[in-house]
Length: 457
Ligand SMILES: [Zn+2]
Image 1 (tube, rainbow, N blue to C red):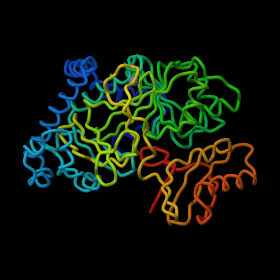
Image 2 (cartoon, helix red, strand yellow; image 1 turned 180 degrees about the horizontal axis):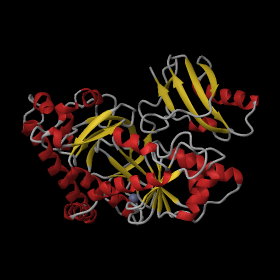
Image 3 (tube, protein in one colour; image 1 turned 60 degrees about the vertical axis):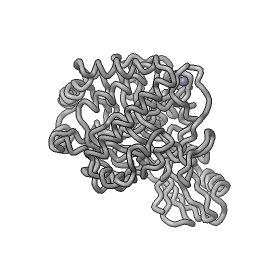
Image 4 (cartoon, rainbow, N blue to C red; image 1 turned 135 degrees about the vertical axis):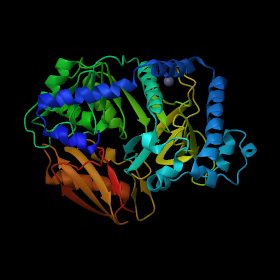
């Protein structure tokens, strides 16, 4: 939704906001209809029946075409790839002969990455903050969006979710005005069968109305940022409320899903979480199958797992994720450093999928605290386990200091603070100065994401 439309939307009463969202939803829904969309779905669903070798061939052919077109028609690659001749790239291993694409190029001069056969004015532009909070502009066509949806629907189907059913969404959009004190804290997009819940009104006072609404709606699945549904689930646990039977499945994305969040949400809803890791840059797609494994959808993108020296990491090693998207030929991203890390696995999943398995997606590369003794600490969620804290954020501006922003929960005392500091020092050492600051809410990033660590180092 552009700024003009958003301004109109916020001035409408709730009933008209529903009409507005539904009309806008109808426009979005159009992308998911028509013969071309159905063809894409058939095509990508058909890949599931292919052998490992056949999938590899599809990926390789897709890449060869992308590379050839990029060299010819994309100004950025015409320049950066001019010294590498086509025959030098004969297999996936040869990808490392090609330069890495930094996010800064995408941020500062996205136009240089657009295939010049397309007229920029006629292209769709997707605005994103990326996984690291950098504002980016991605050019594509309606066909690319259709393809993207076809992959997403395949992921839902594999998870056993009927995507034509009702959906409840907790995302980053401001759906309900900030100052609204009374329910409904949700709006309807009728044609998309989507009920959009506000992630910004989840206070103890308001949560009961969310639960009542969810019980009434009983969505086929809940599509959510982990932190939003976690807030609701934690409240339910504290109050001894079961959310069983509300929904069969939960899809999480956009933020790192921590093990503690997964456990509490799955327990209280008695539903399985299917975590999805993707990017608006359309250059990576990982999704959990019914067996809980994260699969790399290798017909969507080529994902390299690299060590710091640029060599290929072995399964089990923490590695940088470098992506080459295969679906957006309008703006090809070849060897794009997305800024995330993951661990590749060499095991086959019991689900029978030939897509490679990723053992885990580690906290984003930017989301780490650096300690004076040179350690990088990326996973701080266990620190607060069991403490009466609603939300937390760690901010680091200098190497020997961190600020911890906390939203207190009931039962928080001076002892709690002392114990949290003890736990933090256990991980960070004694030389780092820890300052705790109490806040009512933690400010979200652009796009509504809650970043657990903000580092300015
Ligand atoms: Zn699997």
